[in-house]
Each structure stands twice: as C-alpha cells, then as structure tokens.
Image 1 (cartoon, rainbow, N blue to C red):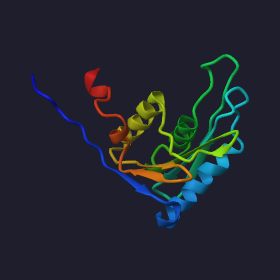
Image 2: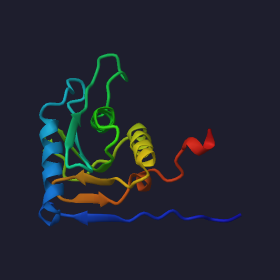
Image 3: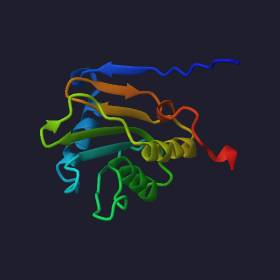
Image 4: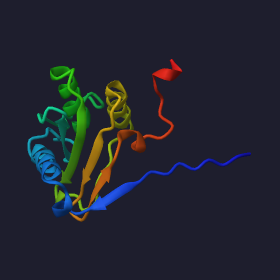
Length: 158
C-alpha cells in the first residue's frame, strides 16, 4: 500500500489586506446576498466573477419550493458570465454568505456541484480562477478552483 497526500495552500487574510480590485469583488458578492431569493433556508449567498476584460458579473442563490430546483450563487454568476462573455476568461470569483444573524464570521466554501461547475470553467479557459471566500473574521484566498476539488472528475475520463 502507498499513501498519497494532497496539500493545498490557502491564504488567510483580512479585508484590508486584499488588493483593491479584490475588495471591490468581495463587496459586490456581499451586496448580492441582499437580493438573493432564499425564502426557505434564509441562507443568502452572493457571488461576483471578475473577467479578464475587467467586467464583473454577479449572481445570487435562487431557491425553489420544489427543491433541489434552485441554483447556487456561484453557478448563477459563472453560468451568466460564460453565456454572455464566452470568449473572456474569468480570473476570480468572490463568494459571501449570511443568515438571519448577518454575514458569517468564517468563510463558506462552494458545494460539490458548484466546485465541479467552477472547475469546468477553469479547465475550459485553461487558466486558474482565484477564489475569495468571505467571512467577517477572515477571508480565504485560494489560487485556483482545482485546489477546492482534488481528484476531480473531468473530460479525460469520458
């Protein structure tokens, strides 16, 4: 038997230490939480995608009484970016979440379905997508989506 170890590097920063462009992206993701549609869970998530051309595309979670027919904020934002700007690669995504008590102190990470969808976009453009996961206490900065989904399923298996 052989053991393999998978290591990822996550930078833990505070809001003020982010570059201005990333602070703006986080603020846009936070704003999206206030207009998400989450009447069932009361868990509001916002996402903002920065494209290589400087355009920012935003999205938020959209719940549905016929669960799981809703869609997560990350996929709403990235799918919109991919559909409206198919030739422009995404370079970063910021994700923020709040509940009835406000923004969460610790960052949340995308669900498995979102990780797979975001990884597909990273693979599609053959370029890393920086991920900013917002929490009021700390922000995680991850250099590429593939670090969120080691041993991912990809087209090479098809």
